[in-house]
Amino acid sequence: MNSSPASSPVALGSAANTAPTPLAPIDFSAARVLVVGDVMLDRYWFGDVQRISPEAPVPIVRVRNSEERLGGAANVALNLRSVGVAVPLLGIVGDDDAGRTVAGLLDAAGIESGLVIDATVPTTVKLRVIGRQQQLLRVDFEQTPEAASLEDKFAGFRSQLADASVLVLSDYGKGALGRVEEMIREAIVQKVPIVVDPKGDDYQRYAGATLLTPNRAELREVVGSWRDEADLTRRAQTLREALGLKYLLLTRSEEGMTLYSADEVFSVAAQAREVFDVSGAGDTVVAIMAAALAAGQSIHDAVALANRAGSVVVGKLGTATVTPEELFGS
Image (cartoon, rainbow, N blue to C red):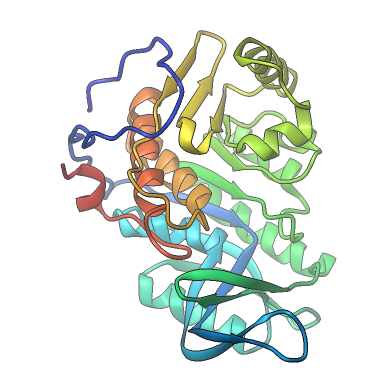
C-alpha cells in the first residue's frame, strides 16, 4: 500500500509546477467494479478552419477525419479497464448504429457489456467538432429511456452486484439511473461501497452512498455559492451529513481536490502542468477512486491516485484514459 499523504489540508492555488512524486504501483487484477449509468458515444470530427461562412458569422470546418470513443459511464468503465480492473457495465443504448458501435468498443476493450437495447430511443451521442485543436461546437442526441428498459437494467444490476468490490453510479442526467435509490439500498444491504458521480440539484436520491464526487459547479448548484473556504467546508459537511455519506470529494480543477469526512478535511494540490481538455476528466477521477478502493487502498491513497489520474487526462484531447505507466511513473 502507498504511504498516505499528510492528512492536514494543503494550501490551495495553481497547479504544481514540479514533477509529481512517483506512487507505488498497485495490482488491480483482483478488483471488480460494477459500473451503472448513462452510456454514450462520443464522436469527434476533426478539420481545418480557414474562413468564415458567408451565410452566418461562424467558421467553416473542412472535416479531415473522425473518431468514435466511449463516453459517460462507458468512459468510466474504460478507465477502470485500462488499469486492469475487471468491469461489468450496465447501461441502455438504442437499436442503432451508434449502439452497435458502443457494443463493439466495449468488446474490444474487454469490458463485460450488460447493455439493454431500447428500440424506442436513440443511443446518446455527443458530437464534437474540432478545428485547429479547439472545440468549436458540440451537438447532443439524446432521449430518456423507457421504463421497461430501466426494469431490465435493474434485473441485471441485481445479478451483478454480489460479485462487485465497488459499485460506481455514473449519472449524466440522461435517465439510465431512474432507479438509483433502489440500487443504493441494494448495495448497502450487500455491503458494497458506492461511489457516485452526481448530476442535477436533487442529491437526496444519492443518500446513503459511500462517496460522492461533485465538481465545483455541481456542488454550487446544490449548496449555493460560498464566501470563503470556511463557508465551503460548512456547506459541504452539512450536505455530507444530511445525505449520510461517509465521504464527499470535491474536485476543484486548478485547486486540486478536497475530501470531506466526519474526521477531517483533507486537500491535495493539482498536478497538471498543462490543461488541454477537461472532457471526461471527472470519469477518470471516479474510475481511479473506485479502482483504488476496490484494491484495498486507504481513502487518502485513493484521493492521491485519482488526483494524479485527473491531472494526466486533462492534458489529452477529448475523453481519454490513463495508463498504469502514467499513474505510477515519474
